[in-house]
Image (cartoon, rainbow, N blue to C red; front, top):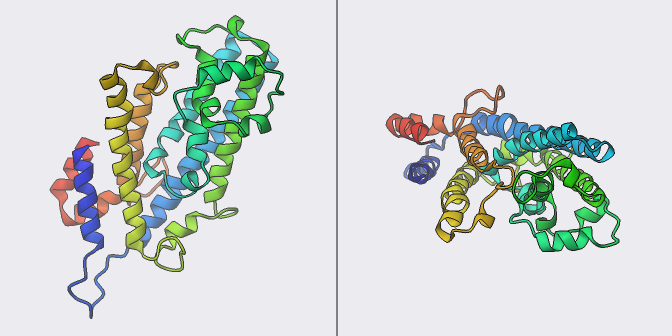
Length: 300
């Protein structure tokens, strides 16, 4: 984790070069870097998340329509599949995911079990629109997780009530809407936030320079590295409180942490699965300090 803090300092120092020679512009050109990270890492991750969010919605609807052990397992697999790209997006929690409140809507925990039971025992119609108006601790990944696995992680389909099936389907629908919205807010054909990254320093109202965009991306990596170490891992351990463990119902916590590290890796090496051309922050660091670049890769 400390290597990533060093990485931030190095990248910031590189992007700041050229100040001693005002006559000659020696500011690095990060056009290819920002194009690759924007389109083939960030946007590609959100596209995968949107697709898998829709698959989770379908699986939850199938479970409601036909409650069976097989459909319960299918819904659980769909949850795990959708969870992976979300966790791999946490290395860049800036822009629409932050501005539109999509992070807490998708990923608040611990689940508010007391209020959840109150809603389940009420006469409220459990629709997607109703769930979209609820607090983050009553929807999103972890509420779906709680309903699918139960407190002890071994809930059977027979233990789910009709209201829980309804809640689950509506909650998955709200999550799918959020993941679709997040992708659309970045996509060129709709919200086009991607343009702020690829055109940083060239007309972007958000990033007046390429340097500021690279700093935003780098700082986001430091934030998630710190959150994994000091929040997601340390808080449950130091406080001896299992309720603070992320994804504990599904026993998916370690996979969450690993995907957070993959999020850092994807930005650093410039790839997301088969997407990307390998132009990531590693190129910037290696150009200045190959030894440090190797150390950062090993730490990741």
